[in-house]
Length: 32
Image (cartoon, rainbow, N blue to C red):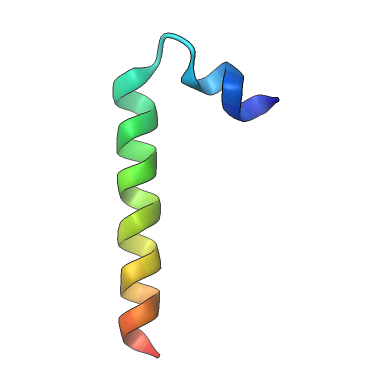
């Protein structure tokens, strides 16, 4: 339930967190 709590009233924070996660995924994807 931590994800749902983090999403409440923290739009920009969640967006930046998701953006970072995507960047890490692609950097890891291309490094292989």
